Length: 301
Length: 323
Image (cartoon, rainbow over all chains, first blue to last red; front, side, top):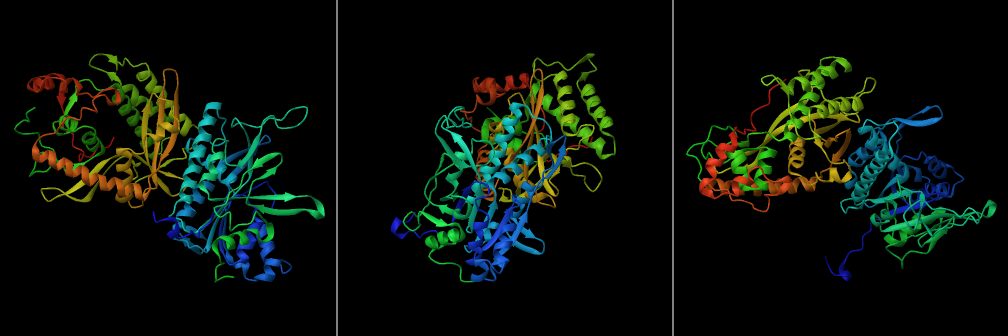
């Protein structure tokens, strides 16, 4: 490894974007499209319609800044598993989402469009996985399907093993995304899961309603064992949080830890001196990319 | 130990350098890697214990019974009929007509009863009267299922007699999973609980790496990976779990590079006509079958070998017959 003063600063950003549902994580991607980044999105959350609204509505600030921004969202692959309802319970019938997601990383095809293997993508491209929570569930169903156990009742031990197997699929995916061979930017969108000091489910005091022990919020995957280790695979972990309510509601992206619903959610950035402590959601991701990379893509802007 | 003047013909060995194996399967390569002396005795000279290990017998019957099922289904038989064919095979194969009694196993986990149970429970879980296995056995052009498939491929490594070294072997099953993804499915039986750590034992693993490497080359469509289809056989239950054995391109390159080194080492031993003991491997996996022989003085080993072992030719190029 060269000495630190000769080390070329990486321009690739691999970022974990976490926040509660409805805080605006998916919509935050619009600023990147407006800034000229090419977005390719694995949408397992079925929440990307917001991007269409933000990038094509003439009243939107993104459209006013860059009328061609919508074209920068080059591909959205909507993936889901087939479910059925039996006596009020929802069961998976067929598992296809995980295989389709991993196929896409090997050779991304969207109708007539082909973008090839993710390792061939450049630094002006952003791979988005929306969300870690849903792709973890897809991995779980994929594993159950292999066991011939999709839609069946599992014993406690089987369930534990299944969760462990799904976690190992996710770990392998994260290792792959972390690898230097992937030179494009990566944004993994995730919800928050609460974990108590002993690694279990937090318990509230029944009288005061306060948490019985200190609780930390981690990226939600499947089960709880993997969540505390997920941030290791990303140099940057930003939090999307809403403050206030009604007309005064603000949505912001934080680069330093915050309290969310009584729990601490840690953040991290590999560039604490270049990055601000927080950004407005509307422009936050683009501002953060600019702070770290120094410039936006020249084409597509 | 002195080598016999001539060895029985073995098509996997060089005709010019009869001690040099040209076609390598995972068993022979694994033996070489474990202990050169083990390789010499079990592969080169073909010694095998007179009584087969219960695990080997159990595994052979288990594989063959499920193969019967796959064939019957491929021929259009119903689930029930195919299941009956598999069970009939087990009952007949484990019956010793000469002695008028069933195969006797002292192992409480692996015996005739647990074998029949394991076959039935496996087929019920994955095929069931109503279900269809998510792993769909590929049908070959001749209409037969892709089970017990033999393969062979030439490597870039050149042997001292000028031939290219080869890799060969037999795959349990080729199956489709999730549409058009082809996997090599390798069936295993174990007494151990099948957990993540069980599957972790297969990375790295000589057999799996060889199958993965070969599978990428020898079939029309590239193999996507390997699935270990494991059965835990306990005294009162059988349980099944499948897991992936992942390999990436970097790992494949490394395995192939290592293969070249091992083939050079095999060539050196063949040139010397001597395969040394690896006395750090004698206790592996419950102890080597030849440990008792190697513990004797070299001048008496031949007699003991002949009395305790029988000879069979280990020739991985022999294609396994259709059932």
